[in-house]
Length: 484
Image 1 (cartoon, rainbow, N blue to C red):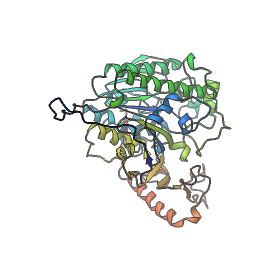
Image 2 (tube, rainbow, N blue to C red):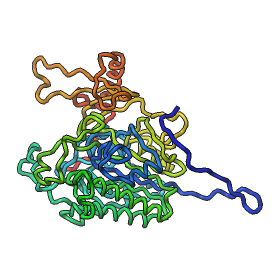
Image 3 (tube, rainbow, N blue to C red):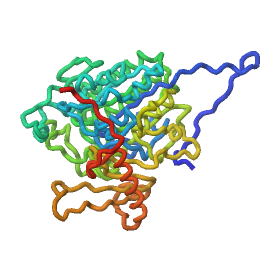
Image 4 (cartoon, one colour):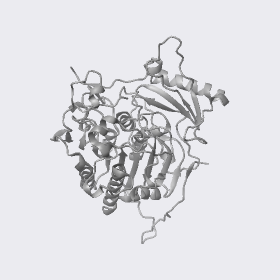
């Protein structure tokens, strides 16, 4: 029996014409698709996932009227790599782009990669990217060069500002500082520096405008709000409204944006033919970053005493780094009040969006994402399409999941590799069905599982690569590069 539980909330009927013949079914267009991608939002930071000290009525409404996924993964524990995977359907390592991109980075998304926006355009979709891009800041990498008809965005994270001292720690950058934060519209610079506290509201207004202007044709909107990424700047109306300080204010500001998008969709009568997906790009911050705290103070203050359901955080390959909240709403297709416990991941949205739009997947390249429409629609006995899921970070394979088992490869301590007598740490095994917080290593009790997943890990290294094993991978592609 499928782990996607549901209750049907509708009934259908067939209308008859006056002459007694069945009426011709109306010609329907492909569904509109809205993907809202939160930034650094933890698995248990919103109401429907257990948060008690923030109010998220609009996100909770998505759960009530749609499906909540409890085993949904970001394909990477950091911003650029996860966004790359979501928009291309591939592990960022496969595309040679698993690093966080900075203002000085000379690489970005390759022009030969086919984003989901480009694919949906072949079916007549209007496409929009609003919020944070983070896949290359040079002109050749911006969203208007990757299938987005319309864009209004900052090119990288909102803490990449010239005042930050974090640049000192980057090799070769001791005396370098980034430019003022740029804001682009359709590839053209419109503001520098961007007014960061005003951007959440402006991005919301831009999203509403795009929906209204394209209500008469199918559209795809990738809305990537920034307020839950440090600094947690919001407009004055949201300051001090939550019980969790500036970070809680940012979550409630994000929830308000969800409500505005929902209200617009309903006001225009598009609610029954619009698929809305909400997810996060990776897990939350749980440790204070001294550099960002020095610059932003309370807007980067992390409560390190706070406990979370999952172990780890952004930047780690524990569950807390990559298992994220995901909500989907599509009336008549996704059962209201349903929950899916099957494994799915951010790069699955690519083939799934293609399927619901009737677009053909490119046949000349390898993808990692799978169609999860059977899970979304709670088809009988629907199971995850993934035999295995790989946890990657910056070319390093950190873990492998198969069913309820997760084989974790501890990282090499700094400066230890290559030393006389050094031996890599033994893999650790966790049963995520009974121990989602990863508290008990059961490797010694299940040597057969360790052996099996070790073979699976070797296959991943041969396919995609692994820096810890000095393997490049035979199916890795090149990123885009700025010509000298």
